[in-house]
Amino acid sequence: MPTLYRKYRPQIFADITGQEHIVQTLTNEIASGKVAHAYLFSGPRGVGKTTIARLLAKAVNCQNRTEGKFEPCNECSSCKEISESRNIDVIEIDAASHTGVDNVRENIVENAQFKPTKSKFKVFIIDEVHMLSTSSFNALLKTLEEPPAHVIFILATTELHKILPTIISRCQRFAFQKIPFEQMLTRLTAMCQQENVKVEKTVLERIINKSDGCLRDAESLLGQILSLNLSTIGPADAELILPVSNAGTVVEFAEKIVVGTIADAIKIIADSVTDGVNLDQFAYDLIEVLRTAMILQSGQNKINSDYSKDTLKRIKKLADSLSAAQVTYFIDRALTRKQEIKSAPIAQLPLELLAVEMSSAAGNDSSCHSEAQPKNPLKDESKKIDDKGSFAPLKMTNDNRPPAPSLTQTLKSAISSIAHPHHEIKMPIEEIKTKWGEAIKQLDTSNHSLTFVLKMCGLNSTSGGNLNISVPYSFHKEKIDDKKNKKIIEDCLTNLCGEKISLACDVVGDNPNTETVDNKTISNVVADFGGEVVSE
Image 1 (spheres, one colour):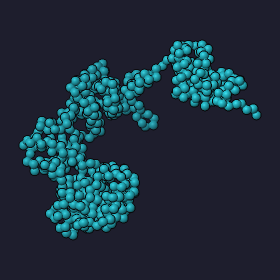
Image 2 (tube, rainbow, N blue to C red):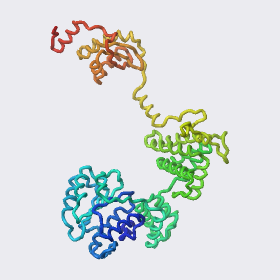
Image 3 (spheres, rainbow, N blue to C red):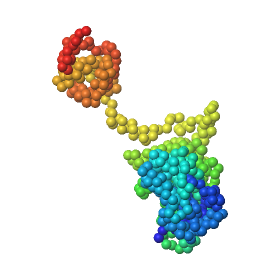
Image 4 (cartoon, helix red, strand yellow):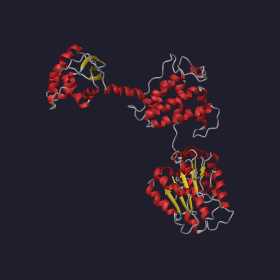
């Protein structure tokens, strides 16, 4: 049995839900015989792009359609074959799986040169066309610009910004929109009637709100609910299929913060963890509640949401007790904390920190508010405007301390301190200098060139946990900073000094701490490399 959205896929233009501006233009073109050679359908998923593309292909190839008419007959062999997706002259291509230039040349460019087998037009419907590579677009460009008279291209995409401007300029463009609430309600109600199932209006409204303007998603959810095989379906039945919202718990969480009972708010988080609630979803639901509060504060009272009347009433009360600046701050912090949940060492910690931050920002304390009139110092602060006409920075605490660092910053700092522990060298620099010569002797047996550079070094100080040395030239520094060489030197010094020694090397010209290298030393080094000193 086909899914509901496939079973009731529109077969004529009159059955299309929404997109009236597009349907009107296309039907006028079909009726007048002035069909374009290339179309570009862009817009959200599940709003009718592919459906209208098939209807267009069906209408232009309908064998019984008369001049001045635009609806396909759905009775001729061409209409039936297109409806059943078996017409060889209507080629549907998924660009996501045919991104390569060779696929485009073989399946589209070369194929377009041949006349239709038995239809009037050969129609190419390329879905998710933005997935094509740049080279594929370029291969398609010439054919799209000057196609044979028997070819029509219909490109569909959900991401118009990824289409090359040269492609867009050669197409007749149509922007699809999300389906309005009332039109979706009418459509779903008609489906329920045809299926002989009574679905309560509140359930259909929940389906529409969950679908966010996508009719295909709404029809899929309705199909799942109808699979319960009940003659009457109410809200309780629908909860078996539709995602259950944590709105009640989330609103209570926000209420506890506003009235200052932070301990109760944190307990709600703990109880949610015990009950196995997905904390990422909890944070998402909180953001939705705060967003609804922000919209209500703006004066928009009609909210298309999945909330009950009682929940909406509580959110409205919550919005009235806070300033716009507070709600904005809450949303901003909630978005940040939500991102930290998956990486936190303790899953609920970001939400607990969020509770503390929100409580601090709300300025609620048992000594400075009453339940009837919560006191919010931020309300006055949010009205202060600086001399440039902008809102002054919000004071999140009474003593004007900046907000606490985020969990991410705290974790980074902790990881850094573990990876790079701070260690102060106890041995005086003068004593280290006495060990330096011994280190050079030990290293000389294994690396002559390295010890030559070490003889050029100046020992300056011990600070920041490092032995700070200097060399006269940059190539000396590169030699010492080599990962392998540096470890050899540090290990040698650590053994001689009896404590951890780390090197920090800088280039300092005319290093005063560097002893003059005599001719004998130079001669020895040159001899080590098999050379000789040549005087000018």
